[in-house]
Image 1 (tube, rainbow, N blue to C red):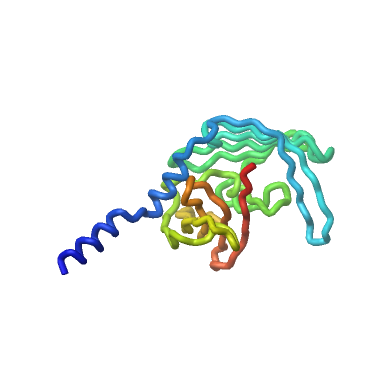
Image 2: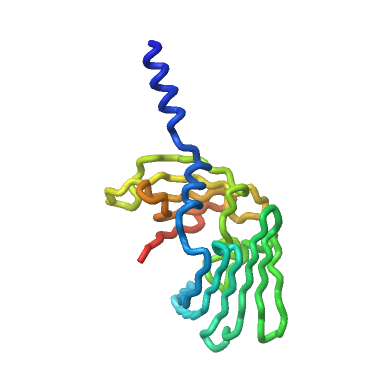
Amino acid sequence: MKYIILTINLTFLLSMTGLELATKMEDRIKPVDTKSKSTMEITKKSGKKRNLKLINKSKDNSTKQMLWFLEPKDDYGIGFLKIEKKGESDFMSMWLPGFKKNRRIKSQNKSDSFMGSDLSYEDMTNRDLEEYNFKILSDNSPCLENSEQECYILSSKPKDEYSEYSEHKTWVSKNNYIAIKEESYDKDSKKLKYKEIDYA
């Protein structure tokens, strides 16, 4: 009986917490500063598509980010600035050249759509470990349908009352701690967004 109790306690001590897994994801080696050209395709309910081209520049692990839109012509010159601050509300602002003014994005408006897409301003920010409650829901789930690769499923619940989400469920590779796919849920716990991440 003593041997069985010792084994159970040892297994419990060796298990990883949600915060420890989120920290491993955060601590992965990745570029500190990046600059890239990107495209964004927005499909309206009518089926009409709109293509945007932009320059993306980030510093300090994406805590500072600037976007400049190059196309289409109507959006040329629009800029987005984000500065994340520890323990403070993130600074986010849009430069609107047509009006020659900046529009500050307030915390209570961060669930608004970004450039008419399914992305919100909240989606443009990093997830500060101190601003979420983490829990591992599974440690042996297939990363994708019919995939042999195993993932953790990590639950991340925002502490911020202004968040549009109640929870994110992220499938995290057990091999290298990168996110493979994610489901995001609204305040009524209904699935709001789904994404798969492809690493080229």
